[in-house]
Amino acid sequence: MSGYSFAEGSPAFRRLTLAAFLIFFFLFRFIYGLYCPAVTANDDYVQTYTIGLKAYTTHTWPYFGPNVQGPETAFHTQIPGAMEGVLIALSLELWPTTLSPYLFVNLLTFLALTLFAWYCCKRLPGYSPWFIFTWIYLAPWDTHYSTQVISLSYACLGSVLFFLGFFETVPSLRLGVIGLKLANVMMGFGFFWVMQLHMSWVAFTPFLFFSLFLQLREGGWKTALPFGFLGSLAPLSLLVPTFFTYGFRTGGDVHGFASGLNWINVLDIVGTLARFLSLASFEMPRFVGSGTHERFGYFLESSWLFLPGLFLWGAGLLQPFAMIYLWVKSQSARADWKAVKFLGAGAFLVIYGSFFFTPNMAASFRIWLLFPTIMLYSLYCWDSLRSKPIWRILGWVFILSTVYFQAGYTLKNVERNDSVYAVNREKMEKAIQEKNYHLLAERLPGSLY
Image 1 (tube, rainbow, N blue to C red):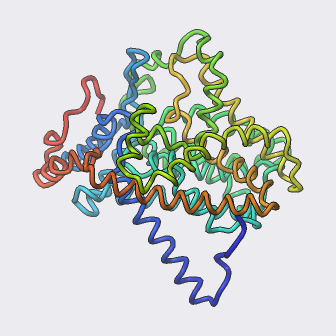
Image 2 (tube, rainbow, N blue to C red):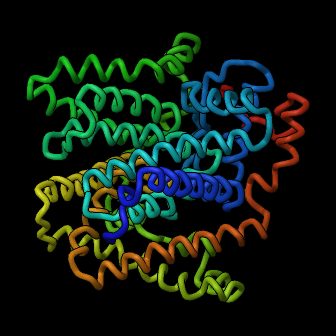
Image 3 (cartoon, helix red, strand yellow):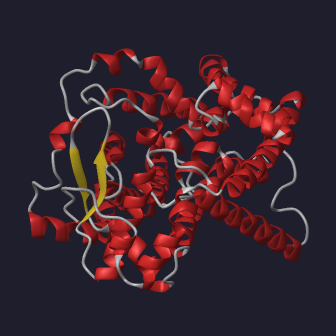
């Protein structure tokens, strides 16, 4: 996994190579998001688009964002804040076409993931940057959750900024590439950004308080509190109008998210751990079919994807076990290995404990925004294997197979032409042209906006 670096070659060649690399992956992820199948219900994606489309076509302020409801309970709520509606409406104002929200959200997530990949390269300088950047751009959960017009995609930017800020404010994790003042600005910004887009912001609070506790214990309150507040001002400006207009008891039946002790979730520690570790693994089968028969049928229809698919299928199954084994057995020479190990364990415990008193299971889409923690931990795991040639070779076989498979997967999706965008494109276009969001979809019954 070591190899050619971005820093090699003449300055002009480096700039050209890097620009081509970034442009290629941005365009690839953009096309991927247009045609990949929905991970959750199709209506979730349509309703997200409709919130922004309504703000654009009616010129009204979107006081509330994503609708939150699920099959486990009868609850229905809507997250306060204008973030989602404003971001989608802004993209349509800048370029009134069906593609603009997809282009804009991919720009946001690509910038976020690029920043995260850069940070991982700084932490692990022995790695080839090509490996780290490519893997972060193409990991299956990342590509499915960060390339489409859905609340998780918009929340990706806040998640990355928050956790990079968190890493740099914890002494045992601090690298020093981001100053403490900026790190606190990033945490404040990211926290209130995510708060308006996804209910998993609640899982960010233990990290926030842990960081503040450590900084205040070191006497850093002059850095932590003022700069954290400074970072929060921009996203808060989109949240405060909702509370001034509707008060603080808004959003719907939030009681549906709480319950007594849910023993099913308490006992599901293995399943929760598996879903958490899979965020940084090549968990491919669930994206190609709903069962073993359908998954093998997918590869029989595309024999050219069978060998890399089979290899990645096996790798994706083994990666979580390897991450557990290396947590226990690895003796890395890196001074921060122990801190990163406990970061991974702590993030899992936060997720696991967060679902003790809720009727919802810890599904991947409910925990994905903590992916910077598990992705960073996984890269440290593979770094501990990098000294052996066989693992370096397997690492490059893995990353090349990932590029090949994801390209083939995208081509098949384009051929199928049944994504949320492909199915609704004509209705989106007509709604934009006629300035009538109803032509795409009606808002869900009981929606506050």
